[in-house]
Length: 459
Image (tube, rainbow, N blue to C red):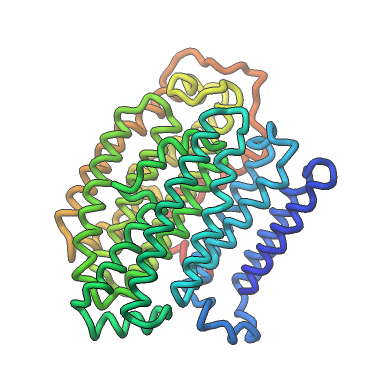
């Protein structure tokens, strides 16, 4: 909880820094606060917070996913100076909202009962509704905000209805008491219905089909840095919340929800990858790519072992690194070209080879090409799921094969056009080059030495 308090206070200070110099210091305040929070996350939790363990517990798993989220948010903050250059009048609000959303994610990593989970989901979601509409003069951004808000409110209704059913049957909000009730009452209709309603609500948060309808329009309409935040930190938070709830609270009725989840994954893997092939806009393609990765991550629920949580953390971190690498390139191109079609990327490698290489390696990692972190993450999840759902793994492999085609289209545009459409005077900033090197190194090192992930996060 110490980390949560530090991030919250950082968000408040960043917000009020907008009083001075139109918030130009907010990014630096956010970076400093995140570095302090990351340092504290490696330290033992203060015993003072033991009083709140029935609501929120900072366990080893909570610490691991908190560290991953903070590192990802930190990388995105470094990209913010250029990405938010046209939001100078309200930069402090945007950085503060990102930090408030991160607070919601941290709550979801350690919640002990359904009330805390609901609070975490709402703290995570409400800032996103605002950030999606940050480009106030852009109709697509306005559409993204209102669509995300309306669909989010609808999902919240499912969540609250499900929680009401669970409380009505189990008589408690506590995860472990709910687990005990589920084990003793495996055929309680109200309890099972509540579990399915909550599953549907959280499937919306992580963009699992058929609850993904909002994501392409919201991802395209939102500012690109916010889209990257949604595709990485929000997905990390949503998936661990779902994983914690289904494997602890609803473990006693697994047979009732696991097949429903399997159907969601099949629809997600096939639909998202086929739709990704049909796109002509790189940002929209990445939106469908994000949906498809929700399908791959969902395999963690099948054939579960003692390493399932570790496999989930590794995959989410590998995917988040790749997301930062691709969106870093997309942000720079979008600023120069005012568009994100495949054509806008033509010849980028001739002008900015490091940026193009980071994006290419990131997409190869997303596709699961060997010697990348994404390959090791997919291999771990696919190997685990083979013990319980071989057919799902077959569908996932097919989806990965399809994804290579749309990733290659962007790579070809960047590397295989003779003439560059970029002016030699348009150079990327030093910060972006440093982050590009960090992303490339991390993806390759984790692809060759996956055990480095454990030492990196103090496991």
